Image (cartoon, rainbow, N blue to C red; front, side):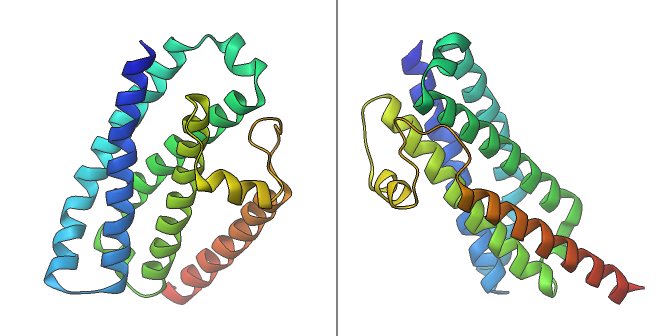
Amino acid sequence: MAAHHIVLVHFPIALWTAAALAIVVRALSDSEFAKACDRALVPLLVLSVILGAAAYVVGLLVWPIEALTASPLARNHMLAATWSLAYWTLVTAIRWRGGEAVWEGLSRWIMLGIAALGGVLLSVTGTLGGHLVGTATAVSQALRLLGWEVYTTYYVPDFTLMAILIAAIVLTAIGIWGRRRAA
C-alpha cells in the first residue's frame, strides 16, 4: 500500500505546482493567456485538494501513527503535509470566494506571495517525504543551512515562527488598510 501513497502524492504536487505557476502568471499579467490560466485555477485547485486529501488519508493508512510519531523525520513530514493540505485548501477558498477581485490592486501581489509561500511549503513537504523513501534532495541542504536537520530535528524552526508572525502582522495590516480604504 505504500506504493499507492507514493504514486498518489505526485498528483497534488503536480497540480499545486501548476496552480502556483498559474497564480504567478495571472498576478504578473492581464493577457488573455493569464486570464485563461485563471479560469482553470479554481477547478485545478479543487481537484488538487481532493487528491491531496486522498494521498493524506492513504499515507495515514500505510504507516501507523506510532511509527509516524517515533521518527523526527516522519513527524516533520506529517506536520508539513498537514500544513500543505490546509494551506492549499485555504488558497482554494480564497480564490473561489474572492473571484476576480483577487487580481485587483494590492490583492494581486498578495496572491503572488501566497503562491510563492505555497511553493516553498510544497517543496519542504515533498523533500521530507522523499527522505522517508530514501531520496534526498538539494532542498534538504537548504533546510540544513537554516538549522533544520531533517533526520533528527523535530520542531518548528525559529525562522518559520518569525515568517508566520511577520505574515500575520502584514496580512492583518493590509486587511485593515483595505477595509478602511473601501469604506
